[in-house]
Structure formats: structure tokens, C-alpha cells
Image (cartoon, rainbow, N blue to C red):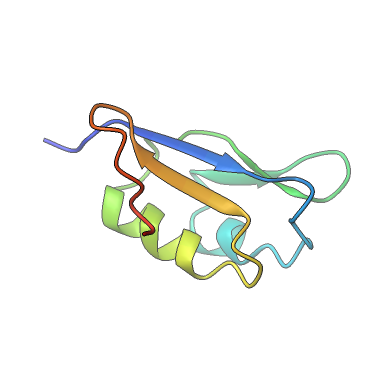
Length: 74
């Protein structure tokens, strides 16, 4: 069973590289300003969400296990 994830994009850090959107369009999309946003944190397996977050060039994405509070990017 996949853990429930809390996924967030820090809009102040996002530089609209959109690696996350290209990697996982079921999870990430763009807002009206062209910055990444979370559409559905459960839209892909945990490992894929973590990989997309690690691909962010400015580390603007946070991924936390909602049940344990563990930062999955640490």
C-alpha cells in the first residue's frame, strides 16, 4: 500500500522550469502565473513523486509522508 503523501510547491522558489510537470503531469500542473502546482499528490507512485521532486533545480517541492511526518527528500 502506498503511503499518503503531502506534496507542496513553494511558489516563491519555483522558477517555472516545470521538470515536475513534464515528469508527472498527473501530479503537477501549472498555475495562472506559469509556476508549478500540485494537482493530485496521489496521481503517481511515491517513488515517482520523490524522483520528480528531486529533479527540481531549485528544490521548490516538498514531499512528506502524511502518516509519519517523514520528509521523503531528506
